[in-house]
Amino acid sequence: MEIVYFDELESTQVYLSDKIRSGEIIENTAICAFIQSAGIGSRDNTWQSKQGNLHVSFCIKTQELAQDLPLASASIYFAFLMKEVLQRQNSKVWIKWPNDFYIEDKKIGGLMSSKINDFLIVGMGINLKYAPFNAEILDIEVDIAKLLNEYFSYIDEKILWKNIFSKYMLEFEKSRNFFIHNEGKILSLKDALLYKDGSILLDNKRIYSLR
Image (cartoon, rainbow, N blue to C red; front, top):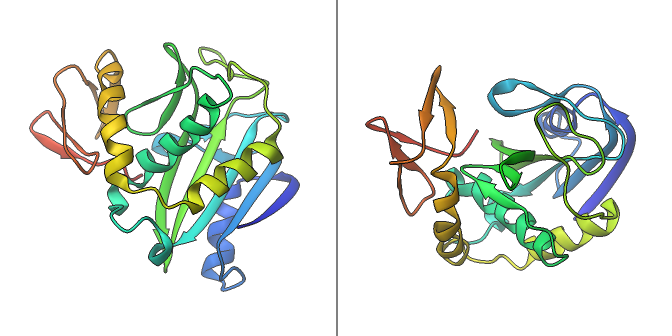
């Protein structure tokens, strides 16, 4: 995958999405900005960030994804792959359902996914050096270029979703101590039922991780 670096962008996700829609990007590509001034977080919130943190978005043709990966599971899948790459370097990061990176009980980043044309687009932000109030930074030091190279090489292995899910299912138990926002409600994950596609049954509704 080609990785294109920028000193500054408003949003790697918006930039990549626009280039795909205009036909300027037709191959798997990653966009990384050292400074991101208007990143997109969960529930369309602005992701506060500074230079030194990770801000990256990438696109993969849907026909090149792991053969058993449901698109609704993409956020969990790609977050978990990054978690495993970081854990190889002795980080204690874990994934809170569906797509948030945590160190203990503090959020350090997040991931979102969407589909445009024939591409799945994934946007990711991780606090490496700086964190906003009530958040945390990654517990190890990493070189962004080396981290992304290792991550995209791992993605290229096209590990089956069923293999990722079998490990994620165990880690999901940690999420039961937390809450999520859904349709204007704050819901506890304590009694959530996890399905094999990564969705959950909560408040009598099926909730998916693709967002």
